[in-house]
Length: 332
Image (cartoon, rainbow, N blue to C red; front, side, top):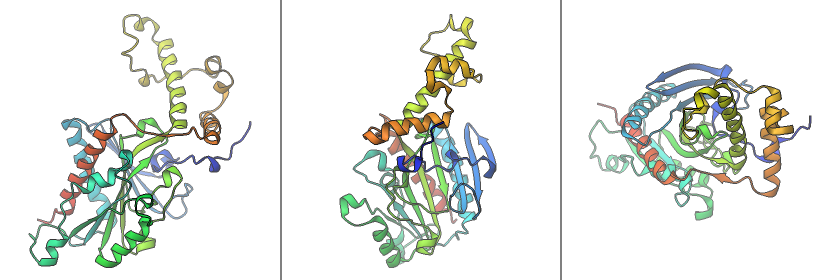
């Protein structure tokens, strides 16, 4: 079978859960249809990922008040966990950095979150602060295309000037599955490398580079065209399998109202080949490699987001902002 070197095709995911990480999961639980996976990696992990703690929160929706509240509850709990794991003291000074480009909606998560943060550092400077509020500052470095200056250079300068005890970064992420887009929040204390998910890394921001703890919070907002094509092929096979196994029942159901994704049975290898021909004989990983190999060289592996991204980015900005305010200022 023909092998493809994926390194040159930028097959990337910012999400630890999309790597072969199941052996590293230390804890999983579900709370009101919100799933949490906690992963701890050591220096010798085989994923080629940084040592540290990774928390993945998975859900279906945050766009109605009920689901928003359920996710907020879990997010608060997991932020407390990462603060404890990172040994963040109650009186530690915090700098929250909103990464990305507010002129590009899928990349504007950092900017949206900052708009919802309670900022207190300037009040500490004049000594007029209620004791229950932590010393918090925010910073939005923007992107080099707008400023002409690398984000990491601006960030390092601000940190050197205001001397926070720890940093929280907020950034939009890239996913390798449609199921993860705007349905996942990742929290980690390993730092962040802005732009790495789309092959445009702009410099690491971590404890190794700035000398203080860095907690990174991200939401996947985009996927590549190759991911969409690959997922569509999988959905096609899933739909055919559903109709094959539920033929009699389908006679009484509108074909447009069937949730075929819940079908557990899969088509046989022969049936997959009958549907997709030669492509149907390939493994899922080989199909994914083939699609990237087809689209990348001709420039058609576009970065894609959802049509309701304007609304969901605002909702995620409020969700993460509200949670950070509650956790950061929980001193009374």
